[in-house]
Image (cartoon, rainbow over all chains, first blue to last red; front, top):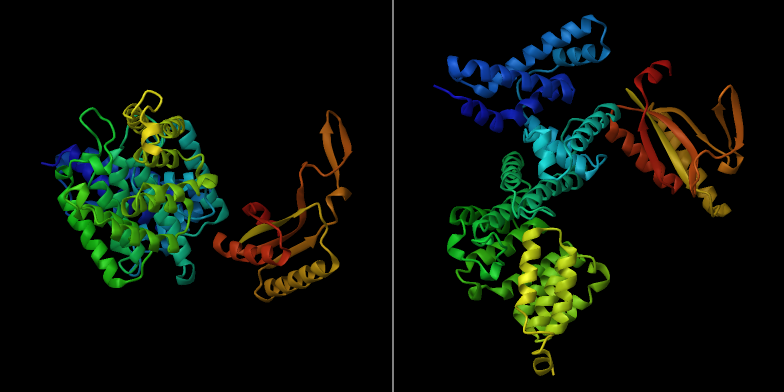
Length: 417
Length: 119
């Protein structure tokens, strides 16, 4: 006997596909969303008594289409031009999935169109493909619900009125457009992994949604190595979630994590994808970052980490995706290979571009502390603490500052002299 | 087919020298030919500088006349196209060519369908 939980499961798994198919059929996102929601409401009434249909997704899509056509016919009869256009569109489009591309692929390219602001791209992707409610998205991004609702309405209005097309971009435009899609998925993941503000270190549901989208993209675009690379990167990062938080809820750095708590299944899957990328040999920024994480995953203790290989990967990453944040992360590997003094010189060279970034000051503080310059380290921790909005990160930095030899860096004169 | 307004935003200063202007005229003229050749051209115009603009507003029963332009700023609309395109991607493709030809930012805006019907 199916329960409401089954309806919910089908909703999670099939909402995006149903909205995508119906958006193609009706040429209009609002019509598609309304129809799919109506169909799920009908399913919640019917399925518990009548049982799950043989193809729940097919049932939802057919029911949604029929309901929408009934409604559009009523509205079209009242000379509603919008309804007439959608109805006309529906008669020209088959309900079946296109042979070449899954409709969800078209929908994600529409949601992540560069003519939409990044915040709108993220919200639309979560709403239309993930089936998250406006309230859930607003909560995840710490935005008032009416603000998020307005953002979604505006974005959908722009798609409709400006004529943002519902299709997978042509081959020539694909690299740039795909980069925007991957950036949105990775942004959702990162927002879930390290909330930029608020008291929750991890918002597991956003990570799960990003990984689900990553798996979907990897299935739909198996020949794009960066799609595989992004999925691998997310899986390998996610594998450390349990070890990343201590019993008191505080942040535990990679070097201090209890590696027995890492998720071996996710690591195996991520490493397998990284190996597949290596065989294809078309490196990109996500693939290299995944490879760096794969090297970390290989070490059963922090001291076993192959920093030489990690540094070589960062060298490669810096060529493909040059930028101060990559240079900062590379400096962390340099500290392990060539010592903290060499790394500090590199980090100090990045001050002009990274002065407002808390991690720059946190890494600098750690290097200064390792060089025995406690007073300088304390000052750097203080800037880092002032700049982070994440409660767990801040607590971790305050603890690190308190652990410095002191007061006022008593160890300073001896060690740095 | 939808219609889009492509507006060019020129900085008020400095005015480019003659050689630069000549190249812009040549490139814009070539773009107009291309738009006409594929049937995407509806209308295009270049405008005199914003210092020549006059603004009208309703004040009660009167209409107030003031020296323009309407919006304060360092850039003003310097010209525009109205084009026909099947979707935004196609309009943006024309916009890319327009911004290169004019060497100035271009804003692409969809026109309402009731105004398309009249065109």
